[in-house]
Amino acid sequence: MFPERPTLLFAHVAYRFAERYAARAGKLPVLEATSLEELEAKIGQADVLLVSGLWRNHLARSGGRLKFIQSISAGVDQYDRAALSAAGIRLASAQGANANAVSEHAIALILALARRIPEARDNQAKQHWRGMIGDLTRREDELGGKTLLVVGIGRIGGRLARLAKAFGMNVIGLRRNPANGPEGADEIHAMSALKAQLPRADIVALTCALTEETRGLMDAAAFAAMKPGATLVNVARGKVCDEAALIAALQSGQIGQAALDVTAEEPLPADSPLWTMPNVLITPHTGGETRAYEDNVLDLMEENLARLQRGETALRNQVV
Image 1 (cartoon, rainbow, N blue to C red):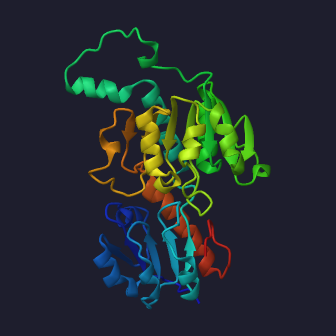
Image 2: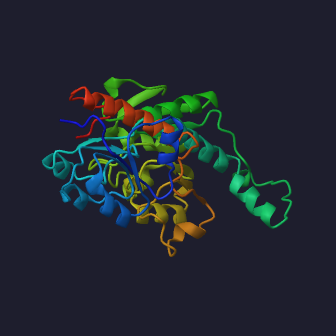
């Protein structure tokens, strides 16, 4: 039986879930953890856990009262689903909570590269007023008429497609099951069509989940298939890209530039060539962060708590 008054444990290094829960007059008992050590110490007192980056799979075997994990993130590749199932712990993702934020972040990265905003910011810091440019390859660009390939048409990819259409772009979408519809793209194909569609794209945006099928999806062969000088934008997961192959493609000029909100290892190691490459824009996995994020996740949690208390078996964004 799921408890009538479960104890909530909010575990994150920065997000202010307890504060936002109190602001909505939440009446359930609350614990907080801002480190793995705190999480390990308090998890035995919790019935419900909100967590993402602090999760470690040994916690599923720690016993205690834990019945339900509401993941703070849409991605759930960090959870051992078999271990959770064996421990009788339910899991739901936060899919959809950051769809607006991540799609807007992706279009912002695309615009930043097209309009050379990082270069302008660097010039501002140097108090350098750049003159007019005669070389067409070095000028700012326009998005209208360009082709965007969205790899992973779902909530995020679909909204990105609709935003891109507002700029007059042609949008090709890839998804696991094309029968689910184009979600705003002009055409839709199966993920298996990636290599065939890459040469058509001026910009390739990765918005897919990290699965065994998508791990290393953008490998050396994929970068070789891209249009020379094309742009890669990754707001999915770092390991969707073979990072060594990405660096090689950027260094050789096979692809022109990349905007990365995610990297294979986070934080990005200090010795990574990506830090100093002039054709790379990096944001520190902040695509999903907005002032509304805590409330978006709490809405999901409260809906799932209500379902559990009613004895329902299906959760919103159910994983386990």
